[in-house]
Every structure is written in structure tokens, then in C-alpha cells.
Image: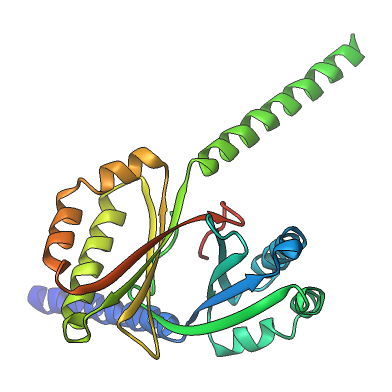
Amino acid sequence: MKIRNIDFIKFTFTFLALVFFEASYSQNKNQIVRLAKLVINPEDLKNYQIALKEEIETSIKIEPGVLTLYAVSERDNPNHITILEIYKDRDSYNLHIKTPHFIKYKDYTKDMVKSLELIETDPLIPEMKIK
Amino acid sequence: MKIRNIDFIKFTFTFLALVFFEASYSQNKNQIVRLAKLVINPEDLKNYQIALKEEIETSIKIEPGVLTLYAVSERDNPNHITILEIYKDRDSYNLHIKTPHFIKYKDYTKDMVKSLELIETDPLIPEMKIK
């Protein structure tokens, strides 16, 4: 009876571990991870940065499915911008591009953007965070 | 006397707010944020990915100054890898490149890497995290 109890506990723990692993794996495998590479007209850079900052801050604050939008400017070419975009899943992305703040940003910045390249990617470690 | 007390409280709060803002700003402004762009020999990609994953996981686990190493493979060119690297400050970076796990990774992968470009960047929102 004692051994059976231990077996039952072992089974329960293994089962729960598998359930949590599967839940975590499923959650991560649906993520959309993208690099957006933009070149901005140098004369519009300051206004573009203000608009992008506002768009990102609003998205992160109010959209649970937008996991990050981490934007950087190249030090030697500040008008070359890369954004690491992580969405929870396809639905979150589809919702994002229909939000008023995204549409406002796209419309306001459309003549500031010289080029935009969207690169679909696969993360090496999907559960990676920023400390 | 009552008014003076209120003034003192106001002053104290303002002072503390400034101290915290300055501390947070100083912390972020010393960050090193980089994009590493690598092209890997396609025949070495699997081994390279294993080595990079191990190097990243060790760095994040044991180096407090390595804030993130978020690596992605381009879906259409999986041997094109981009890493968003965030270090707490210059000292953390200098420590990182002298760690045994980093030196092991560099040595093991040196013939797998066709090209490596390191791009210094400035983050638009330095306090941005991944949810």
C-alpha cells in the first residue's frame, strides 16, 4: 500500500509536469516572432520616433497579445531601425493591426518610411525574456 | 507649521521621485544594446544552434549583467541569424567575453561562421521588456 502511494505520487507529478510542459510549449510555439527593418527619411526621424514610441507604449500597455516590440536605431545610421516583434499568436497579431493606435501610427508615418522589410523568424529559445 | 509640514512632504516626495528616476535612467543609459548578424555554413547550422543555445542559457543563468540574448533564425534563410544582445553596462560585456562558456562557444563555432556583423544600437525604449 505504501509503495502504491509512492507510485501514485510519482505518476501524478510526472503527469502534471508533462501537462505544464505541453501548455508552455503550445503557448510558445504559436508565437509570431518577426524582425521589421525600416529606413526612415532622415528629416522625419524625430517625428517618426515619437510616433513609434507612442504606438509601442500603447500596444504593450493595452494588448495582452503583444509580448514585445523592442525597437533599436543603428548608432552609425540612426534612420535604420530594427524592431523585434513578438506576438502571442496569429489572432493577437490580426487584432493588433486593426487597433486605432496602430492605424493612426501607420497613417501618420506612411510618408516618413523609405522602406520596410518584414522578416518572419523562428526564435532559438522561445521562452527567453529580458531581465 | 502645518503648511511647512506639507511643503516638507512635497519636497521629500519630489526629491525621492527624482532620485528614483535618475537611478533608473542611469541604469538604462549605460546599457549596451547590439544586433549581431551572423551567416552560418548551412551544413553546420544544427551544431551551431546547439552551441549557441547552450552559450546563451549559461550566460543568462549565471551572468547578472547579461540582460538578454534573443536569437532568431530567418524562416526563409535559417542560416541567417540575428541576436539582440543587451548588457547591463560595458563592464558586464567585458566580463562576458572572458567567461569560459563564451570562449568555449567562440572556439567551437569559429569555422561554422561565414560572416559576423556587430551593430551598435540605441534602444527607443530602454526599459522595454518581453511580457
